Every structure is written in C-alpha cells, then in structure tokens.
Image 1 (cartoon, helix red, strand yellow):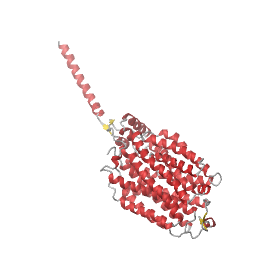
Image 2 (image 1 turned 90 degrees about the vertical axis):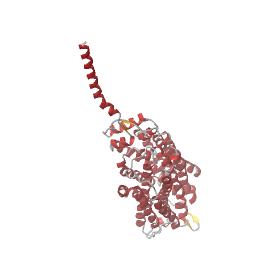
Image 3 (image 1 turned 90 degrees about the horizontal axis):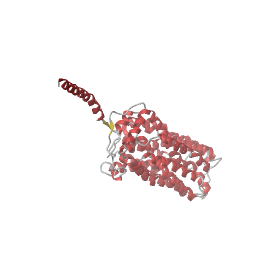
Image 4 (image 1 turned 30 degrees about the horizontal axis):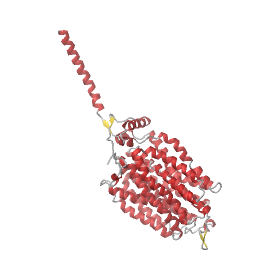
Length: 490
C-alpha cells in the first residue's frame, strides 16, 4: 500500500512538472499578428528588390503604350490624311478603354485577386498592341488602340500589388523611385521611333515595342499574390505561405504566433468609397486624378504638337521648323519629326526623374498633401511660361521642368491613393480614380492637338487653371497618410 501511494505521489509531481513546462508553449501559441505587423517585421530585403524591378517593368510597358501615341501621330496623320480632331480621337479612344476597364479591373482585383488582373493586363495589351500594327484603316486603328487601353488599365493595378508588400517607412522612397521605370519606357519608345520610323515605318516600331510585355509575362510568375488580399478573402494559409517565402528570401522571420485577420465580406464594395469616412476623400481624389492625367498628357501631347506643327514662338528657328501645318489655307499633313524633335522629347522625358530626389524629400518632410499642392501650383505657372518666346534651348528647359512637375504630381497622387484606402476597397478605389483620370486624358488631346492649332495661349490656359483649382482642393483632403499603416478594412 505504501509503495502504491509513493508511485501516485511521484506521478503527480511528474505531471505537475510537465504542465509547468507546457504552459509557456501554450502562451506562445496564443500570440497573434496581423499582415501589417508581418510586413513591418520582415522589413526591406531581396524580395523587395525583385518586386521593385519586375513591377517597374509594368511601368515601362504602360509608359510605352501611352507615349507611343505622341511618337506616331505625325505618321498616321500622313498615312490616312487625318484632321486634327481625328488624331486627337486616337488618344481619346485609348483613354476610353482605360476608363471603362479601370473600374472593372479594380472590382475584379478586390474580389478575385490583384495578380490575375495585372497578368491578364500584360497578355491583353501586348496582344492588341501587336494587332494594331496590322490595322488596315483608321477605324480599325482606333478600335484596337482602345483595346490596348483596356489592357493597360489592368497593368496599372500593379501599383496596388507593389504597395501592399512595401513596409510603411520605405514607401516614400521606393514608390517615387518607380518613376525611373516610367521614364525608361517613355525614352525607349522615343528611341525606337527615332531608329525605326524613318527606315522601317511605324508598324514595325509597334511590333518591336511589345518585347518588354512578352518578357514580363514570363517574369511575373516570381511575384506572389498580395498577402493582404488573401487575408481579406479568408485564405490565411496562402497569406502565411507568401509571408514565409518573403521572410526566407529577406533572411528574416515572421512575428511570433499565428496570423489572425477577420474575413472581410464586403470586398470591392463601392459604398465604402462614398461612405462617411471616405466620401470627401474620394470626390477630391477623383478630381485630383482627372487633373493629374489632364496635365501629364497635356504636357506630352502639347510638346509633340508644338514640335510637329512648328507652332513655337522660337527666336532661332532652323529651316526644318519653318514648315507650317497650315500653309496658304491648306493643311500640310506630312510633317514628320526631325531628329532634333526626337532629341527634345528625349530630354523632356528625362525630366520625369530629374527631380525625384526633391520629390522624396518633400514627401518625407512635408507629407503627401502639401507636396501635391506645391507641385500643382508650380505646374500651373510653367504651363503659362510655355507661351513665352524663347530659344529652342529655352523651350527644352521649360518643357523639361514642366514634365518633371506633372510627373511628380502623378506619382504622389498614386502614392496617396494606394495609402488612404483600406485593403477591402484599395483596388476598386484605384480603379475609380484611374477611370476619372482617363476622362482628363480623353479631353487633353482635343485641347493640346486641336485647340493648339488655333491659339497656343488658349490651349495652355485650361491646363493652368485646372491645376490651380486642384491645388486649393488638395488642402481640403481630410487624411494625411505620411507614416500611416495601410488599413485592412474601413
């Protein structure tokens, strides 16, 4: 009997020791973390370098498809004997496709994933861009370019995918630096135009220009679906797997515990954008995006138009810039770009990144709202300065600085939008914003390419006024996103 009691006592002591050893483990498994905490804990590393370059390729593709219109407009005008409004309609149809598919792409990205939309955009835009090079008529050309615009709308969702992986403290540095890739795309299409259009023609230039899209289709498999999207969709295992791969690649680790986030049922609901929390932000952002696109494409198309039609008030014009679009009551349809015109466009494209260090400094010191207002005020001033008579060098410098300002403005609007909306409506919010921006892109050609032929100052004034109004509207934005964590829900 005594031996039996001793055995029970020893067993009880042993069981107590086991329980004491297991309690810390139980406490450890009770710890939880969110996606935001995981992204911040993992930090910046090799994955983000890969993400930066591959998603930068998406910006190259988008820039090439949009800038292509400025490069080939003299060629299609000549081939099909187009009036000014017909040339402007080409750009408008591209932005119409972008506008329609912008909202649709945002909804699909919030409901079914960002990765699918971006990848589909690559395939769609490259396919229809290739078909454009075989367009037998002007009607087919504008239809196929509108389909390209629809694909580019999907590619633009890559900005959301990229933003959701970047830690908060690195967003103000990495997102403005992405402008470099847009500049590369712009310069690449201009160089292709300079080399191929005079020899092989604009159709071969388009065929060669889809090469980056084809390369990205194969590289994009290295980019995972957004962990924030997977969490919002209730797919926690996929989100954890993605975060673990990123942590391993960055030689880091996830926070202790397990991932816990609520399943968000109202993904992609437009009511979130117009609810009490985001109503004013959404309305002001829609106008800001309208103006950002209006200014950017206005500056691109205006510079192209001023050079093509020789509408500049230049004090040292050469013989090539003496041929006028309107000649003795008739139209001269075939005024191709001279080599110096391509060089001017190249220099102005470089302006898109020349002030990126200044942009990064402004974002980190003053935040998003003040930076936006300052850029919009300066853009208004420089649009009006284009009307001043100067040398070709003076015009090039003005154009260089104007492109810098409107590009920086567009970039900050992108950053602010991606940061201000919650994950459940981030892609939809971006989709609505990009759609409103394309309204600006649809109007800009008729001012920059049609009205410009009648009066340079009348064409430049709407850009300056819209920018000035937007600068005052920016101060009314209720939320400053500098240093703020990305919201998961509203």
